[in-house]
Image 1: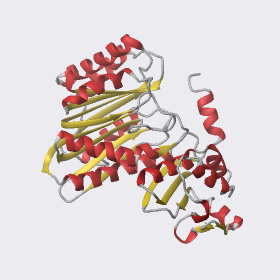
Image 2: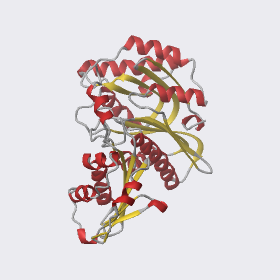
Image 3: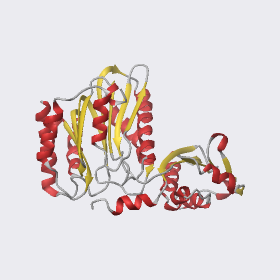
Image 4: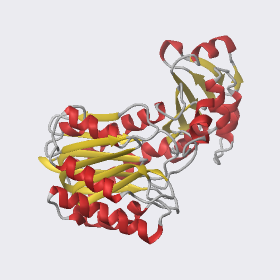
Amino acid sequence: MKSICAIEGVECAGIREGKYGLALVRAAGTAAAVFTRNRVRAACIDLMRERIKKGFLEALVANSGCANAFTGKRGLQDAESMAMIAGDAMGIDPTRVAVASTGVIGRYLNLPLIERQCRFLAGRLARDGQAEEAAAGAIMTTDLVQKHALARRETFAVGGICKGSGMIAPNMGTMLAFIYTDASLRPEDLSSSLRTAAERTFNRVVVDGDTSTNDIAICTATGHAGRVNPAEFSEALEECCRSLAIQIAADGEGATKLIEVRVRGATGEGVAAEIARTIVASPLVKTAVYGEDPNWGRVMAAAGRAGHDFDPERVTLWIGEGEARVPLVERGAILADPARAKRAMQQNRVVFELDLGEGGGEASAWGCDLTERYVEINGRYTT
C-alpha cells in the first residue's frame, strides 16, 4: 500500500477515459481544507469553503479534464450535482461529499459522463495499491508521474496523493491534494496543523508563478488509531506534505531538474520563506539551472528583490550538497569556481544554500528549471 490505502478506514477507486478522469475516495471523519486565494475561483472551491465549516466528510469525488472554473451559477449547480451523483452512488449524504476539479478553465462539467463513471467506480472501491494507483492516475492532467506520500509513526500514519505540474505557485495548499490519517483529532487541531503544513510545504513550491483557480488540499482523519499528540501529528503531516510538494516541483511541466533553495540566517522564518520562494520563482534562476550556467549572481539579485532588508556583505552562498557542495560567496567575498559550480549544476537536483547572517530564521522552497518544453506544453494546451 503506497499511502492513503495504508490508512485504516480509507477506500478509493479511479478511472481515466482520454483526458477525462474521475476518482472516488470513501473515508469518514473529521476534516479540514485549505484553498486557493485566486479571486477567480472554481465552483468546487466556493462549494467546499462552505461545506468544510462543518468539519466532517465521508467521501471525495474529483474529476480531471474540466476545471469548472469561471462557469457562474451553472458551475456551482454542477458542482453540487457532482456531489449528489457521487453521494447517491456510494449511499452517502451528498452534503458530506467533498468535490474537486482540475482541467481547462471556462468549460462546463460533463455530468452524464461523471454519473456513468461514478456508478462504475462505486462498486469497485477498495483498500489496496491498485485502487490507489487508479485514483492517483485519474486526477492527473499534464503530470508525468503519480504522486504518493506516507509518513508513519508508532501509533498512526498520514498518507496523501496529489496532482500538480503546471500553473503552480500555490497560495494556500496546492493544486489537488487529498490527505488521510487514522489519527483522531479535534477539527480545530486538524485545521491548524493543515494550515501550517501547507504554508511550510505546498506554499513554497513554484513551477511557473501562476496560482490556479482550483487549488485545494483536504485532510480527513478517520480516527481508527485513536487520540494522538497534536504536535507529533503536525510533524508527520508536514513530512507527508513536504514529500508531495517536492514531487510536484520535480514533475513541473517540461522540467529536467529539481531546484531546492535553502535560506537561513534570516530575521525570521517568514522572511526566509519569502526570499527562498522569490529565488526559486525567478525565471532567470530557472533558465540558468536548465542551461547549467553557474550565473550565481541571479540568485543574489532575486534575494535582493524579495522585499526584506539584509546586508549583502554578510551573505554566504553555496551550490550543491554533501561532498559536491561548492562555496560561491563567503560573507560578501566572491569565492566562485565556475568549473566546480557548473559540475554541481549537472545534477538532477540543484541546491542553493543562502546564509544571510542576520538571525535564526530558516526555510526552504522548491521549484524546477524552465525549458522550451514548458512553452510547447502551454502554447497548445487546449488545441
